[in-house]
Image (cartoon, rainbow, N blue to C red; front, side, top):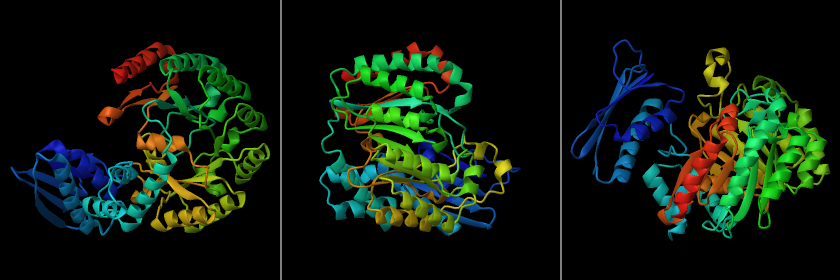
Length: 484
């Protein structure tokens, strides 16, 4: 437990998120109580031109106090001064350095990209990230490499007159131990799938009418696991999609095949028939024991079989998702997984570092899993990067999450010409992304104001079906606002 007592709450979120990086998994209490067993007690005192922090480590019996002069009229600089001060104090107490320094946001590459677009040179960007955020050399170099790659890949995307489309299928064979996405067991919805698709099709029809005149650049069907649908329903969905939207200028069409236990030849043939250009087959690990622990009801052999089946049907852009830091896995487990992946030769690898969200079973029922050892290390991150680069793949997008093991990042690698443009667009937030389906979020970009607004659909499938007109009305108001 961390007690976070601040006189002024203006920078509470910034302070709390940085403390979460140093003390992952700790809960916070915002009032001081004598009967609470605090691991750390943090006090913040605000003056006219200063901010003072004290950190009392109850376990070590050590108290650190520090103060910085600030100009509260400049919130950006004040926030960063406070975070740099806190970083030094927490670093001394924990003996830790964070690879991303004071950065706690999910889009660090956006900083490098914005600087490059404004005319800054690479050396200037490097120095800025080092000084402002205390980011490690390795992570600044990675940010710059990916920012340059993204600028190249997005060079022919029309942000104002184009858009991307996301279709959400919130069903899976089972729910994985670490998962917090909107996902419901397909077994509970198979008999009512036509009801869900009817509501989804209504939203798709509205979206197509509302976005008429704009160029559709990328299409992504995700979830959940879209291939948990039957081949019949999958074909019905994609046929409706192709008949509703203008695919003339679509640069890529991705479908998450995700769980190998949801893939059949019949389903892959449907995807191929309707021009899907990219799929993901996601093992997460190639260790049999771990697959059982995390609730993946498939084997390593099934991963290989489905991958080779997709290759035999002509799919030439297959991505594979992996997670490092899974319960009980060590460096050698990661190495064996990467060897197995290398032997298959996918066109892209997305390496995730385990992030345990509040809604994940691993967090909600943590007493059941307290014996599971979760370790994510820089060496594991470096190992996956070395394998990906050794396979001729380069990093092309990156994002971070809260409560990530080791405070690292998720990185997408791809062979030349196989990068997922949609993944970059969703991270860099430069183009409107219209989303249809339960639990999806439409992101509407206001280019002239350099901002975006979100419109969220309800997550519950039953509610989505019943309130589809409300979902459409929300989207209509936001899209109309964007045109004013």
